[in-house]
Image (tube, rainbow, N blue to C red; front, side, top):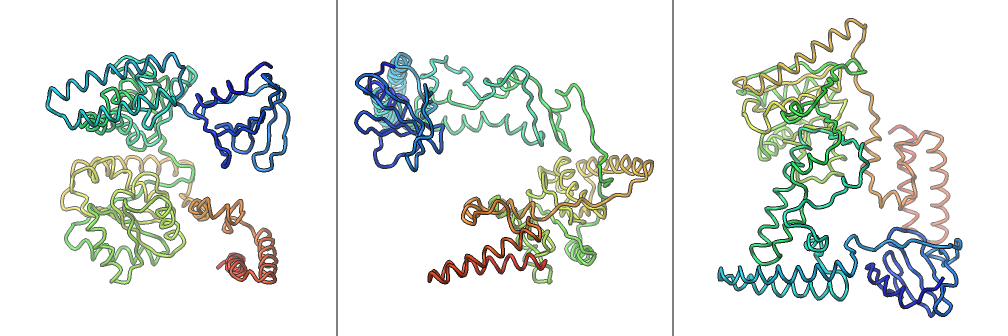
Length: 498
């Protein structure tokens, strides 16, 4: 095949590949005489070696990036761009002209409004970006010029992943009462941030068109949509052609009984109920209105001898999973939280959910929030809910009525079919394994955690660890031997069921 080496190198640079003779990584290439090696952006373990003879390609090989060994020869290969922001030279030149025009218009506006600092800032930054785009085809923050590079009209909708779906695609919105409003709010949140950048001369106005879809634009792209929620909102009700209600659970579990108690003396009553529940071998969730109240309640309970932990928004996801794991593994008995004890928290050991200040109408005590919080006690056959309130608000009344309606349907079904409610059986290691960091798993070389292994696998692992420990000690690698000893003790504890 006739192809000049220098033409190939020029084309690789246009595709945003960088030349690097030392660190051969993805999206780079290196040149050794008439041999060009390219590490495609889409590959992780293999690269492409192209050997030239004069102005012709003599051979194309796929090679191992570590050893350099040839995996196989190829007749042709496709090398995808290293960046999403790649366009033709013709489009780039047109885009640069348009950016220049927009810059002149914007500078005139800023100077007319006596915003000289903003004008200087914008001109300096944009002219630097224009030069980078012209010479390199790329600049930092290139996404802010996406409308110009795509030659779109001002205010037009950007391209999204949805545009690449087949015509008969289906969208499933889980917890739709939360996810649909999030889609609705994406545009306004993005616009609010970028408007500030435009006003103060950090970006051209066209940066506003690098944005999420407006909600009506998203709706136009929908083919079919399935809403999944225990508490669907008004939007789902208005836009659903068919509604299916799943009230009956395979385990026969009922929605929990709800008791309303006065706020006066609620903490003393709560501790009494916690002691009853813990003595029966179950766990407790307590939800408060504010972070400060949750902290004080946690401290007070701890002083009263209650094994309690506090879950708040500052805790990252992995640590949150570890706290839930510890609750299930009987490290503590009571979990106090604010807004994190709602959707998606499935802890079968929880038999009591206490809602403090349930009559304080608002987001955290709305009908939706109350129903979601009540649902945390629906995983245990002994599940119950206590609401502490002096008056029954509209939201409380609706949440209690809806829970009782579901409970009645479930009880009737169980009586008709002779079903006895059974607490959900959920293995603790499902959560434990999720909390293991990827780095730790790779370091240990384990495909699964010790908690997931049966006795036979544990014995095999123990024998391997003991062998490696003795070898490390013989090689005078005492730190490594100590690490292996600790792991061996952990495995032995798991074997003994400790």
